[in-house]
Length: 303
Image 1 (tube, rainbow, N blue to C red):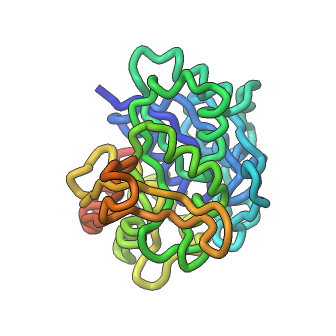
Image 2: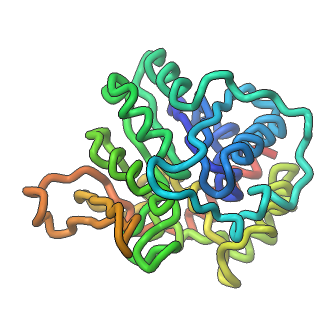
């Protein structure tokens, strides 16, 4: 039976790849896409999500979410994703409208109406998730798990310590990690290893309309180097379908919310500061070859 998921995202080029797979993969039942300010402003992330649902003629609803972090000033990633967030491809312009309710309301409604607990997959800042948990705490027991892209035990990509999604709204990340919901952290420790190789990039435009679209976006992606480009957000979906490709460790994650380490995710790797308790399953290694093979097979199956 397909896994019911809700994707909370800030498209964004790698988010576009994640949305593409979430919409089309037969092992996912995508219930809702919610958007948040992150890679670009929330009006643009919403438009980008709607471009993708239109591209695939999908009826998955889109709800617009938080326009700024809870407390911290907003910093985008235009230098990585371009001014629009998804440059390089001419999408249809006859887009549907987002839902009239906010992302938080839409999340509450879908979670509470579901017959079984739903998996949340946040691939942008966690602002919507934090607002949901604070406004409607009754949803907590109805969430199966959170598989979140973000964080790092090692080097960050916004500072030497902080990864972008957590850095964007560290206070929201702190709320999410303190919620008691089972969380898997899919951070830079694996996403910077699971690079799409030059060989994968060369094959991508030859495997159908979807491959052509993604290849066009990836050519405007300001991340990666000659060894390959990271598909940070797609790793969450790969984990849900193929956890055997990951090495994980259970630990307690604290989030720094001020000072020069703002946005750092600190893992209690010795179990020394929380009486041995854990609040996250942290991905620490990945089979990068398996990721590339799965990604190409998945895109080719979409056509």
